[in-house]
Length: 87
Image: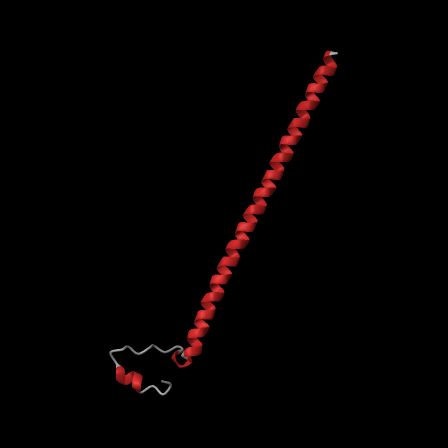
């Protein structure tokens, strides 16, 4: 009788240990998925910011393509501005 009781307790401990291990495994997987989603959201956000920046640069370029690669004249030099054919 004592042997069966000990065996029953041992089986219960083994089962509980397996359940705890499985629960920890599920929790670790859940945390991994959450981290991956956060990384994906961050990458998407960064890509959207990059696309927005590129669109803004393209819009500026479309408005004034002749300024590409040239320093913009300052306001204190109106003769330089007036002599530019693209204005």
